[in-house]
Length: 318
Image (cartoon, rainbow, N blue to C red; front, side):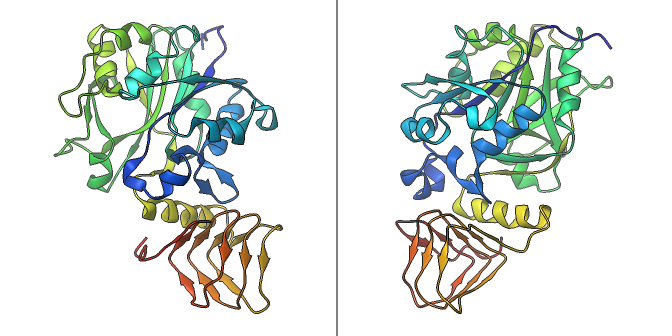
């Protein structure tokens, strides 16, 4: 196998406001939302480090100071982080274009609000290293059509080359879903510069940029290396992601050693963060309690998210 000599860099796009997941995004940028004992971004950076990436660029905007404070220079995660500000968010492609003056190497790009459990991310990295491959889209066969409609559809030709991508399709043409992770060589910036605003949202969409790249004659392929993923669109998605990760990790619950639970308090299929205080002997079931939350209710907590500011209930069915 012939491989590229340039090292891969990591990119996380984390400037969006996340309005639909409010009120959680009022208090915290979506990429810092907790999944078990780490934020989404920490999981992403660890995935990057696992394939040899040591330099990560993070595009920040909404509550960007909290991301800088949480991750620092990246040393604790084994990487070096550079932050780039997107002062006026105009879409994912626009966010990525802010990095053109910083990045001249192949990129592994994550959207900061999507959690993914990979089976072999290295396969996608090796695919991009081939001289005839210009880009790789991380995909999965998705049985839930509504999840494709929330992401994008991918169409291939008989050779496995991507010929078309469709942003948030009303009628998905197949079950192949783009998962919000991309690998591109630096020439992708040329396509980004020539990407028009979309009619859908009047923003610069990365799917439009990918289509420009493909129409330029660049070969884009797919890598089906995802066990499961979760796009954090609504509060219930965050709870579902945590409960699924409990199952994936073989745990029935995660309770921080720095949590203080009242005698007699029971915990089942739940995640409780550091600094949590539960004052009464209640039952906590299928719930997520953020770090620092003070639980003063005498009512049982079931299928809920508890933050330091509020309790979100009626998240059942996840």
